[in-house]
Image (cartoon, rainbow, N blue to C red; front, top):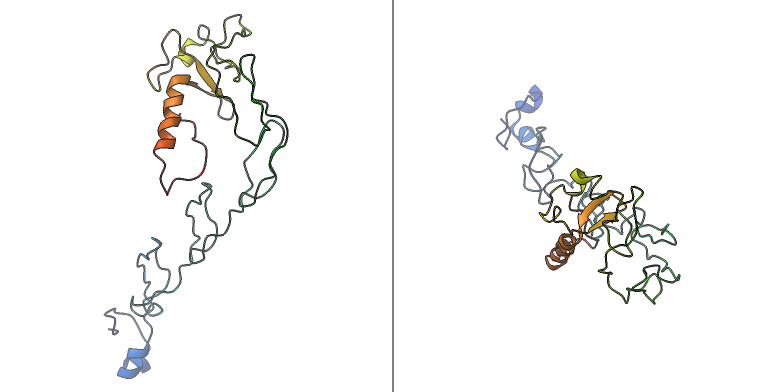
Amino acid sequence: CLPCGDFVDVPCCIASSLSELQRFPCPKPCNAVLTCKHKCVGTCGKCQNGRLHISCEYKCERPLICSHVCKAPCTANCPPCLSFCETRCVHSKCNKRCGELCVPCKEPCAYKCKHLQCTRICSEPCDRGPCNEPCDQKLKCGHDCIGMCGEPCPRQCRICNKHIVQEILFGTEDEPDARFVFLPDCKHLIEVTSLDKFIETAFNNQNEDTALRFPECPR
């Protein structure tokens, strides 16, 4: 039995000497949970019987403020994010790393419809809000678009694709005058009043641990 209380096989020359036995490092895995929440990969002897653990050898994997995962060693301070930046607009896409400053787009803002138009450049906050008028376009099937003016037209029709359009998420999808926003990235339809409330709730519930990012699709 070693001083730490573990029973291990040791050479006879060590077992016969109390001083050698006391200096013999216990080879059993430590397996203690460190303050970083990772399991210690050291041995009982290397960690001085749990009094002083070796440095964590896992990757950090904590979410950065940009919502990407840190890939640095756990014991190091999180460096600026090295993932590629996801910022883009209708004119261009940022080709820098996420932790670097983007080059602001200088093109005129493309957010406009026949009712409202932003007068600022693309990289500045818009000086107009969303248009609340219904879209007046016709779908390929000949029925009215169920989207909002100035937004990408949903591909689904309230009549031809009723089972898709009225699939309940927030409870307002089956109202006869419901209007929808089409999300181009994920191709989902979200009822507009419910989407407004969802985004408002997401921003109002932010705290110091919230990543700096736009709300994700609720589906």
